[in-house]
Amino acid sequence: MTTAHPSELDIQPSPLALLLLGRQADPTSERGVECPGELPSPSDPDLIERARAAKEKLGDKVFVLGHHYQRDEVIQFADVTGDSFKLARDAAARPEAEYIVFCGVHFMAESADILTSDAQQVVLPDLAAGCSMADMATAEQVAECWDVLTEAGIAEQVVPVSYMNSSADIKAFTGRHGGTICTSSNAQRALEWAFQQGEPSETKVLFLPDQHLGRNTAVRDLGMSLADCVVYNPHKPNGGLTADELRDARMILWRGHCSVHGRFSLESVNEVRERIPGVNVLVHPECRHEVVAAADHVGSTEYIIKALEAAPAGSKWAVGTELNLVRRLANRFAPEGKEIVFLDRTVCFCSTMNRIDLPHLVWALESLAEGNLVNRIEVDKETEAYAKLALERMLALP
Image 1: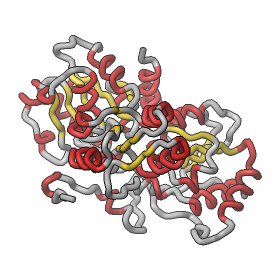
Image 2 (image 1 turned 120 degrees about the horizontal axis):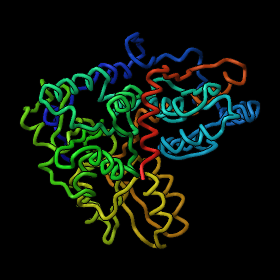
Image 3 (image 1 turned 135 degrees about the vertical axis):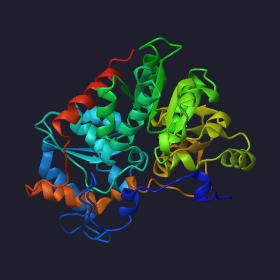
Image 4 (image 1 turned 135 degrees about the horizontal axis):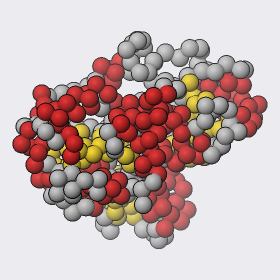
């Protein structure tokens, strides 16, 4: 396997990403990393029974959400499973649940807090469960980018479209500037809506924070060319772009990516086709453009699940998404004779998603059962108002 040197990829780890490797505390970070209490030992043989007992004691007061990428030991206690937006809406549809325990990552819990009522309290079992992609776009960086667009004389022509995988601050920025949120399922509709907000030949989209979803949707679904897209790098002066490059672009893509989906390569696709004749390659649109172009099927997490459900017995699939989900689907459909493998031969979990483990879940549930609210995720009212405005624009998409 050929591995690119970090300098070739122009990757600059954020202070927060480095912080999460240790146990320090950072008062300037949006998240803490300390657990205010003793975690149960992961070797405790009674963890499953303890989780079950605490959940039973809480009854209808608690609603546990499990993202598709969670490990099986956690998923077994989820009342519902799904992608981040579906889970946030499910939580809002359960107003009787006082506690929403979100087994996912930080931006997902923020979205749940935005969409649920003031009487509901959202809990994240491990505050250090973040998202590397969401952390690649900070409020300060995006504000600076808008200044750059203003100086280039094009800010009034730019409509921000932010992926659901973004912080509440970025969603609020999007709402303030007339933009909308999108998921990987409705990104095409979101972009079509954005380009209808002004003269189609003059309107531009600032797509945050995943460059690959933005590029793949623009080129694959809307028929644009790669030349219509430029990448804004927040670590370079003026994003590494000239004013003319910004004026000529239709899609201004933020330099962000998913650490899991971004690892799949064209070599991965070619290798699996050679190794498994007749295999169907099914990937998530957060993958690189060359991977998406070489795949047989491309779609969101829900699309991937439905495609495998509908697949004929005996079919072979190489899936480019998070390993926990791929492994769960492989086990689920093995009795039907469907062969499902991970697209890359190197194992790769979502490391931040995997911070939510059984000890953290047990600790959170037992704390709530004892009347102690822990690890609450709460978005301030102003941020919530603008973020909800952007989310409501998404919900109103045709």
